[in-house]
Image 1 (cartoon, rainbow, N blue to C red):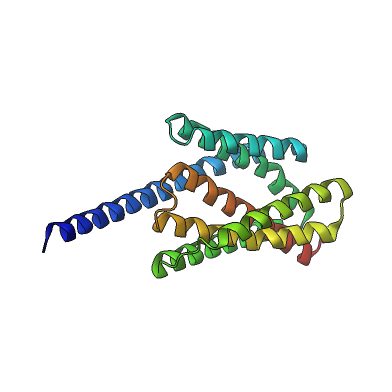
Image 2 (tube, rainbow, N blue to C red):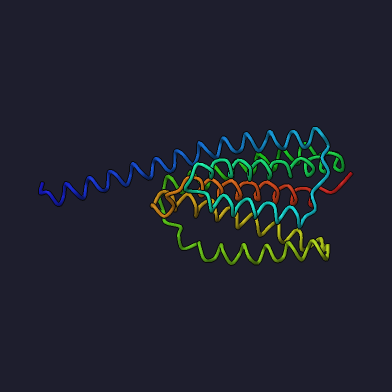
Amino acid sequence: MNRNNITILNQQKESVLATNKVLRNTYLLLSMTFFFSAFCAYLSFAFAVKPLNPLFMIVGAYGLMFLTHALRNSALGLISVFAFTGFMGYTLGPLLSFYIANFSNGPQLITTALGGTGMIFFALSGYALTTRKDFSFLGGFLFVGVMIALLAMIAGIFFNIPALHLAVSAAFVLISSGLILFQTSEIIHGGETNYISATVTLFVSIYNLFVSLLNLLSAFSGRD
């Protein structure tokens, strides 16, 4: 084996090790942020916190998300990611209270949405990790889809059209599923080397997936 082949093998080995490190750190941080987010959701639920103004929630969420992105290469990025995920968990408390108070099967709806979210995440992540397919081609479609869904969501806030709310929820289920495939693929193939950025993308995807499934399930179950 000549020196060039040895160099190539060493580079490939280093690339695999770097990818595995990003993947491991991403899932570790993701699990930690979900525990923290769940704790914040429990606190806001237990203290019966009132829902935030939708526009304030959007500004707060995206402000913290962009701050985390700006700080992703420093230790402050870790503080920012916990601030962001804690805020998102805080906003879940009033939402869960609403479903429990207004639906006789509220706890079942929440449990079903949570279980469905977990199944979809593990299935899609497992598929991307096992097949190692490159889903980078989804990037452009997902970006456009997110922009359209956000505009539709803002329109739904102002015009309060039930059918539009359902359409947005269905769209976010598809978009979030695509983002899970896309982000996992990016980590595997070296397109994403920052575990903080990867964690935020996966967290937002799972959060939106859960909320969207909950909206869809409640719409089709009706209120008793």
